[in-house]
Image (cartoon, rainbow, N blue to C red; front, side):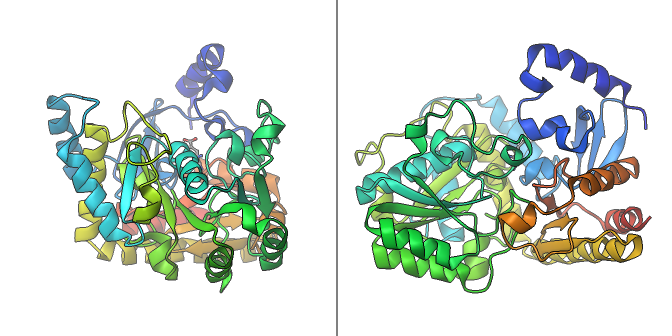
Length: 423
Ligand code: HOZ
């Protein structure tokens, strides 16, 4: 595999861009390699600047549920571009998309469109605080909710691999209202609620943790969070930036049958464009400016091109419920192959999967929380990553991310991937 052009671009990029990348996990540091610079992507395949083509399971970290450059999405986006890129004024598209989101997730009665998952979560937290008049929030160790100051506490994703779980540059006073509980550990939540419950604005959770690898909620855990937040008058926020429209059209809340008070979305909802959303109960969302006193704004919020990509993507997902069955089944085949690889090589592997989200941890332990997730052998992950890449398969360049299956992955892609896993 020749990667000369990628290497050259990486060298040059490091002179102008911190670490040569615009988001840390892309630097391939935790797998000890230099990143691939991408030239184009189509369907299930991604091609780098040296002309190497890979079957892609990063899928832009989640948005690519239909695969890359779906013709219907591209066509609509091109035609939207002809009408102008941004107006800074309302459009009918925003209403159409808001309607689609509210229909997909009935807990979302009103929704605000923003430009990134970080912005969605930051705004949801502010709204929850404004609504309850309380300052504390509870998050879970290893859950990642974007990079806003108050949430970079025991975070997942690249914050786990850069060895700076709590970022420098965040004043201690900005995180003093952030309490950290342990994922899947009811007692840790109960203890915090017993002490601070009356002051807790919200508990925010990734219903499936997908930024410390993939860690599933244990039976009853999400139901417990629903109950305890009700008891203390706190809000329950589901961060569905990854799970929204992926575990099913109605996201994790439909999959697990829980009605959160607020939901944050990103990735798929923008169809590959920079767009995200936060929404929830009408009385809560009516706290947001200009109706209520919680300020939040954005020049590119509800951008016409981004909403076009989002609408077309959701239309396709809604029209093809069979996609969800297909991607689940394909993910199950990959999971089985990964387990078999563990048996064959003698390197212990624990595979976690829900729907089309999966991840291999190189540990013999059951992985159900931060400590077990971080017990994975990172050298073994790096070796697996290298093996897959050499075999033409592009998986996340970090243990602490998910493997995403898309509707564009064909039977041949899955078969080929299983062969590489087992080779
Ligand atoms: N925070 C993203 C993964 N969970 C990474 C985004 C990126 O590097 O593009």
